[in-house]
Image (tube, rainbow, N blue to C red; front, side, top):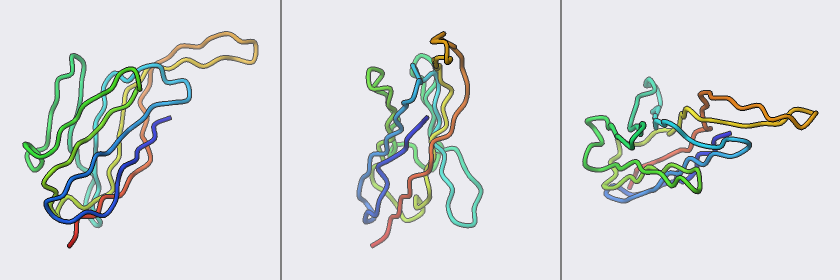
Length: 126
């Protein structure tokens, strides 16, 4: 599963670091995207990290947000600086991962799939 955390209330101009940690049989994160959904709006892509650590960002966050990964910890981060009220939203991580689980007979099953983390709420307000 993916566990997103790090959200909270911050003043404009402040910073937060979101984390998306993989566990429960997930052995590696291949690609990962951070999305956000503000009240009354559609979910939008904020940042992404692909193979070879190539990154992509929405124009609205370029220069302020940075996506990075810690492979040994199977965790991806979204560092958000100079936050603005319009960054207020629930943030979600979505990843393509490799996983291994074991049957009742103890046989490993290896696979790959896409998973969503639960949202973490970010509120930027004075």
